[in-house]
Length: 158
Image (cartoon, rainbow, N blue to C red; front, side):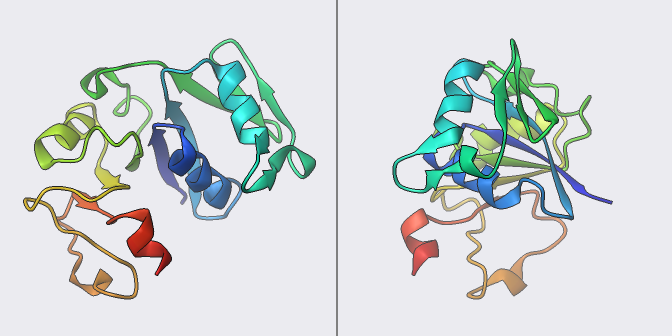
């Protein structure tokens, strides 16, 4: 069974996470939350001056409230307050928090309140959260850790 993932924030990090996860067995991206229009999100996903042309290998089409990639429609939400997102209705297992705003346990709790089971923050977080870096300390992660920080992009690239 695939892990249902929602991406909150479809900027550089959110789009890179999407590119890595989309179409891979074991995960399913069920929603994206970003205040930008689906037209612009589709354009930014298609054409990346650093990562290359995603549209060369994938069909990306914007809808009124979604983007469709290779025939899979992904709903786009434009909700500023994560407490109001439909994560429970969508049965979201993990939210990738990529906005840079929800970087504390108290703030990221909004995704749990909205029905998500787990939250991974793509930035350094406060001292009240575990910071997990794969192949460094990932073995310290427990099933009870429902909100974690994945450290910084610089840390992960090392």
